[in-house]
Amino acid sequence: MWTLERAGPVIERLTSVRLASTSVWRLPTERLGLSLQRPQRRAVERDESEIARWVAHEWPRITRGP
Image (cartoon, rainbow, N blue to C red; front, side):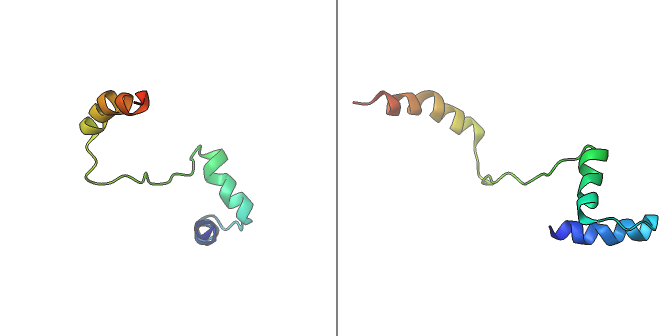
């Protein structure tokens, strides 16, 4: 990952300890309890109340069939 390649030299500069990329990965995940986060892909115009209405009223009608 490109972030490991960038984080490794920063850690080395701050602590004078050179870490392998696997150790750079373990530092935030295991030691600090952080996790990989990805942005949710949602439209800016998303209307939660309209979605809830559609799921409650339209979806049952569609799945009911003819």
